[in-house]
Length: 468
Image (cartoon, rainbow, N blue to C red):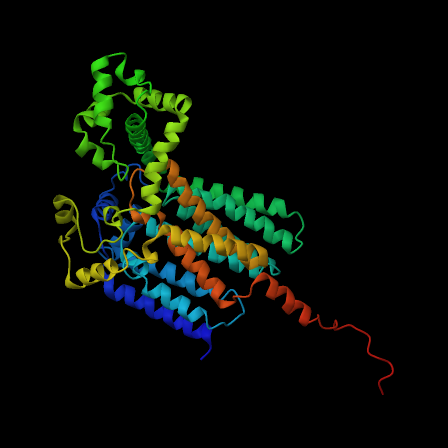
């Protein structure tokens, strides 16, 4: 048994176990809402529309979410299998790497959960796996162009799942430029620009097909929610912030805002309404122009306090000081009773769901539930792969850089410490670790190996005439 084949068997077994343990799928409140909106043709609000559309489509084929969960998990495990086949090495390190992945609760349970962030992560990893194969097949023009088209489609779909997933597109374009330059392709910059512009065109076409323009009419609500959260956070830490856009010089209103803002919760925006109901009702009653004017005033004149507020929120998103408050795992079905009745779903947990939660809880305070741990893995791999510099390394490096950038973008946009927000970082690091484990040569060992094995003589070399 070769180690690469053993690793692929482990991954295949992991895929089958995820389906057996989770089907027809774990559904939190957000999951039930997405299925209800999709099947009833309702706007997804400020969430991206792709998952709702897929849920509605697959529900028509097989009622429920079983088909969606199966294909979603298949995209993840198929990407892992194919990313492990990019390299020609066959190290036994790939087997423990595969075992780590299939035993992680982030895979065992979360891959069976109907969440936007899981679908986004799986599509993004599939896109960069396709890019790695394009780098491997670059000397075959037809193959690498077809694979680049696949990359563009997958990353466009990922962007339609999570808006900040668009950060993957320019990173992938830079990777295309570097790979084309490494192979000495003519005009590598033009190739990268064509890839980038093609991705933008795909996004535009898919946006029309998915009626993103209609869905985006409610994106303003998401922006307002974020800015309202920022206003409360800055008012909580800056006793001298100018609130004239909201209080209009009324000292009683000003005093109320500052007093209630002291209870600001950096964990999630929903808690503001619970801890400061009077302030939240007041802010909801303000026109959008007043909220925007106050937010811009804070950014212009109190930028340092704005950064402090964002840091306090992001520290909960990234470091999760109390992970139990950040919904690290969900199993069962939970949702609005009217939605559940309409969809024919029953609220609650099965015995196997409770067992999955119990299994996950054992790892809550270990590195397996630490975004910082996966960020460290990603950073180390970025350095090692960038120094090694093989064309396929460039593609995997781009995946890891994209995962880090998407995670960093939540410094600006996070309004809750939901653990799943940084899921791409976590499983992206695991995918990168699996890729490296197949051929774990370090940059210096790669150069030494090349020196120890000089290139063979070309086939057209003239034979030695002294030979009889």
